[in-house]
Length: 320
Image (spheres, rainbow, N blue to C red):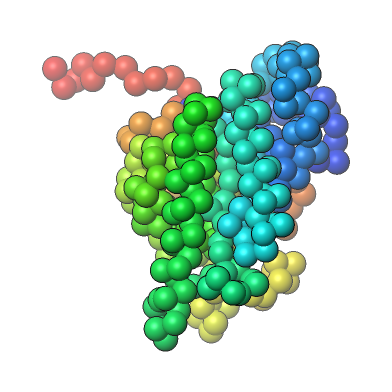
């Protein structure tokens, strides 16, 4: 199992500076943003797509620091009710899939997207309850839109030999494991999870159980923690719209690995991932507003370096 980093927090540095820094941290893999919300500071899609020379140069730069790419990232909303925005997101995603295939990268991370609540609406609508009845009708409509789009995208990904790893995220249609499984069943096995536990903790989801539930549907993993602050949650719950920068007033915050849940929990996460057959990257995503990007990444690496298994299991000689 590899310790990796989503390089977005280091976007103010050049790619060479970023790779040198991460190589010195004994990082194994990088996840590179190439569009959408992650941006493209370290991988401008248009500069590499269909350009073998540029792709070869990128591989040489990675090799110089003994790094591999775990995934390309482009998080946007390809089923947005605004056709122009949806088309732009769809183009980003399809080009990311093509570029991944050309680079020999087997995964693209993204969101499921979120439609409006009806064909005449203009704003995406996150439905969280089936009543009043128009909300259930809206939710049914959203799934029709999503299944139609993702069925075509899944076939495109299969043609390219690339897995699509969807991050279960609030304000997206797929935000928890049963929704992830529903979309996978409606498409093909190229559609799976970018398993990011940070969005599951505050929903009350047991992360090791969610890993067991999704099992082989996990295509990629984000290593990001969440702190739960009951003093605030006891009053207003966890559906919290307080700005992320008003930390003391929030019911939960994204935290560096080990600062929301302890090292023993992360060892259980790693062990459960191995039980279900996942042996890919734990890609650290830094979004902890209580620490700098570098310190947050370094502390996460410190915890994960003790949690991950560097070798494959040996024979269970004691069971013979």
